[in-house]
Length: 135
Image (tube, rainbow, N blue to C red; front, side, top):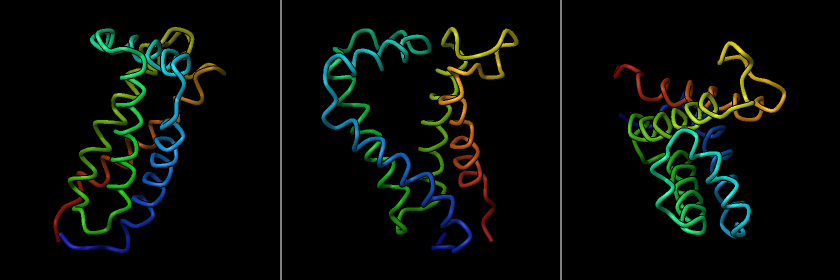
């Protein structure tokens, strides 16, 4: 599947956002990395086996790689859409599993949860790229 102009806004918006987030995490201090890891542990307890520094390094590298991949027009949209869908689904799962981020119904965000609830938009973009039919 070649380059298609209608996918450009999706890939640019998600790619720039995620790349910037990853770049900002490249020199994450141990305390900040530990804080991010603590939140991630709510959804993925297996991450406890990593040191906070390694977690921060892997998270930054993953975000930089995914963001750059979304911005690279020569990579297939279905491929980068799959990566974005998995990444965004993990963020949404973390949001849903972290106490205090949702109202009592377990879905609607509290004031503290709004920052993470927005990741549903990334999931929608990933799914749009992944599920688009070949013409």
